Length: 503
Image (cartoon, rainbow, N blue to C red; front, side, top):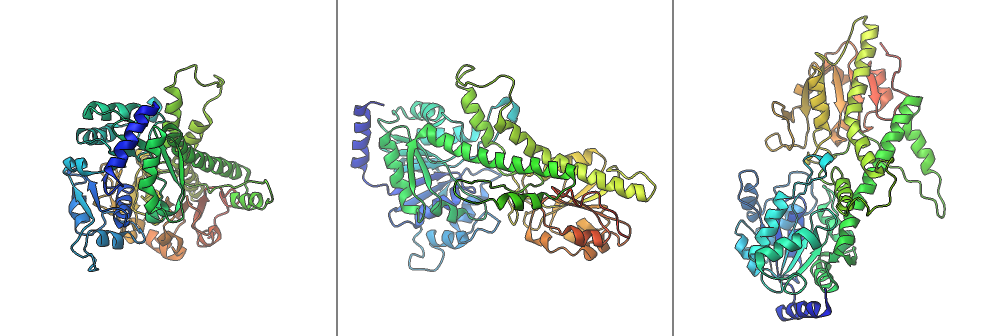
């Protein structure tokens, strides 16, 4: 980008004045809290939340305009903030909404800045081709109504090179304008976790990467007012894309390292959590030995795909761009595969526990015909977010093996649960799921499962014999369940797996 084009864009920004009207495309876990915080900032006058009036998600428009959150998990402060910015809280601005949700994308023409927070999943990670269809549609909608001096920011997690490449090309094609000359373009990735959305946006540092320094500076103007503790970290758009994909890739790698160590501990008959405590005790200057927690698998929208975006970004550069040995697989992709294996390991633990019961009962006991109570459909504890839940591949594999699987989750709405296979039911009725179960398999660390009473659960399971408990989140005390006559299995609990059955 030449100095002259940057100067022209800077003049357009100055002529337009401070950012006052903002558009947020995508009313989901990222777009909703971001839009509310923009609307609550005194620096901004009006915020539009753009949502397609589709059968699957059009209901959000009426809910948000009525001051009601369509997100069902616990999100501290969000419901109150929504009511406030739409003028439904009875306060001094009652009846004067600063936020409006709409399906009328022509209002983009009124906006000084437009952000896009649209999911970018991989339908088949093996081919490294993401499903950019919804994102492309959103970008085209922006391009159709783009006016000179507008700032466009991608918040979606994307393959490195997308902002300055595909997004720029589409916006220029649709608008007839030139990025960096007639309008600004940047990437400012979200860094939020379900259950603390508002807090994360305000307190986490914000990565801001424009296609040039003028675009970066304008993007910093947009995000500065919503930060409380967080700082702005400017960089290039590609560096911002790599930052986002890399930070999630590293977390996925750390989880995979914990999962592999847990499998080693199981094989060697020792307690992973003892080992973790021992490793964590090594402290001092220059020492970093943090180990995350193992578990039944990794879910959600981010960690399950961001490794593939990072990998794709390098592969798109061509076969000679990366200096890497041909006979060594990608460390990051290998970590992703380890985490994808954990639901299968949960099934293996269930099988081994059933087989152990069969030995003492002098009969073959397998998954075929077994009744399994699957506890937890959400991928995150105390949340309704079930996107890419690791419980789903377990469910499918158990069913394929001939088991009857019933699903319980106290947070997930049975009517809107994501990724529920055809024929499966998610219920909030725990007793109906536990009744007559041969095995209780915990996939989510919901607080409701941390207080389960072994004797009460056993009574529902049938009250006699030896039911199985498989703990994928370390929420059940092994000794309590073993003492109550259960056959226990747990991730990383080599010291307890294969224990002698009591009673």
